[in-house]
Image 1 (cartoon, helix red, strand yellow):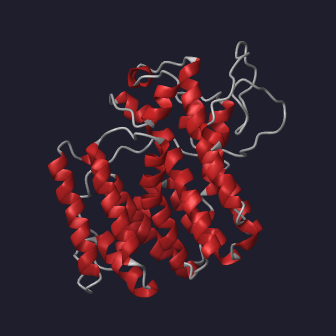
Image 2 (cartoon, helix red, strand yellow; image 1 turned 60 degrees about the horizontal axis):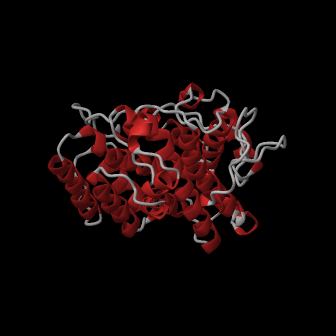
Image 3 (cartoon, one colour; image 1 turned 90 degrees about the horizontal axis):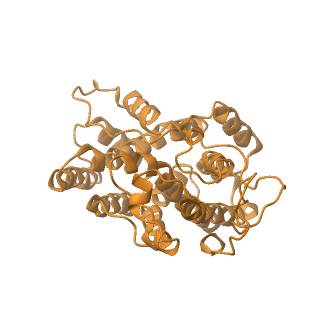
Length: 336
C-alpha cells in the first residue's frame, strides 16, 4: 500500500513544511493538506477501575453517557449527533467498549485482566439469555440488544480481541494492527450500523476501512502515553525498516528516522480513510451518522502532518475547540 511505501528521502535538510500523505518523505509541496481539521483529543485517558457506587435503577443511561463523555470525548460528540431513537443504544455500545478497553491499563496482573474479560463474556452470554447482570453498562447493553436485535458475533469479537491484547506486546506488523482494529473499532461500527437500521455491503466496506483507520490513529495517539510507561506498540516491521528501536520512542528521540516510522503508520490510516470515501456514492445516507468519527481522525492526521510527524509535539495533546462545530457541519452536509 502507498502508506507503507518507503520512497526516496533525499533532501530532508532544512524542512519548512511536512510532506503530504501519499507523498514520498523526501518531496515537498506547497499544495493544500490532504487531511483537513484536527483530532481534538489529548493523550489517552488513563484507565481507572469501575466506580464503586452503582447508579440507581433507571439511571443507567446517564451513567453510560457520562462514562463515554469522560473516556471517549470525540465518540461522545459523534453520538450526540445521531438520530434520537438510536442515541441511547450507541452510548451503551461505546460504554461497553470503554469497559473492555480500560481493563489493560487498570490491572497489573494479566490474570486479573482475564477475569474481567471473562465477566464481560459471561455478561454478553447472559444478556442474550435475557438475564443481564446488575451492572449499569450491561443493563443498557441488554436494552440496546432487545431494541435493535444486535448481532452477538460482533460483541464477542470485541471481547476476544481485547483478551488477546492483554499480552502487552508490540504489533508484529501493520497487518496485525489492522486485524486488531477490524475486530474492535470496525466491529463497533458494524453494530452502530445495525442500530441505525442499515444493512448495506458498501456501508460495511466503508465501516471496515474507517475502523482500521481509527485503530491505527488510536495506536499513534497512545504512543507518548505508552512510551512514558516504557512500552511501545507500534508495528515492529515498520520500526525495523527505519532502524528505529523501542528505546528511541521511550527516550522521546526526534530524529528523522523516528518521524519516518510515524509518517508510514499515519499514511496507512490516511489510505484507509480514502478507501472508505471511495464507497461514499453507494453508501446510504442513513449510514453517514455512523461515520462522523472520520472528522476526528482527519483532525489528528492533519495535526501530526503539521507537526512534521513528531509524535511528541504538544499540539497533538490538545483538544480542538472547533471539533464540535466541524462535526455539526459534516452532519448537516450529510457526508463523511
